[in-house]
Length: 276
Image 1 (cartoon, rainbow, N blue to C red):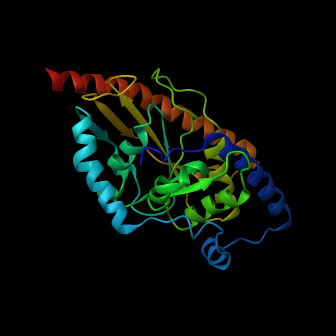
Image 2: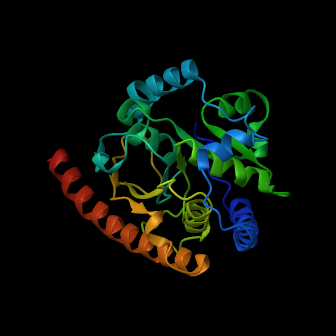
Image 3: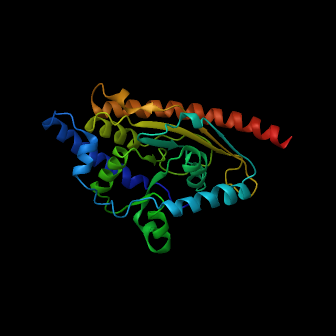
């Protein structure tokens, strides 16, 4: 599970290409599209490799939630779970502080809490052998870093059409200094492009702040996860898509900064009370 990490650079390249394609497409097609009908008509090229195994995900969540995470971390604090919709397409946009993030997120927002599984974009080399067998059955789907394909982005949009919950790290890498780093434009472009191309999807981007009491988590480290209020992609359909994507990125940055400040402040107080 700790290999379910977003392939940042390749995804950004693909999103730019998909964004350009849909811009050209929208200039010649003004008729509203039924997202569910279109998805059913056009099967995904990745549908045979991208799925969630019901029995495997139950075992993984049980082990992670009841054994691995409680045994490794000192205290785990989660706030804002009520901000995650029970249905509909969601993009979780967490700060990225450690490889543990991809285990902590399912603990805080996954099946046992919200009844929803999570989907991660992973590098193609992580989809090989036994590891690949596990990753592909636990919600991961592959992307080739060297030769990113539009098909992968199309599949990502299809997952949103199906009402799935995706995880994309907007900072584009792990940053252990506790500061919010400039966000990549991928999430916003993906959200506004999909919402514009398939009106009515009602995509929600949810900021998530993750904070560890140590920069390099070790046994006994405390962790807190703070889930912010959703940002609706439909609120960014008022003009040029590129400009609207920039506006969404700016709003997401503002919310993540608030969460980052809040998570350190609240976490330090909570952890101090716990240890005292």
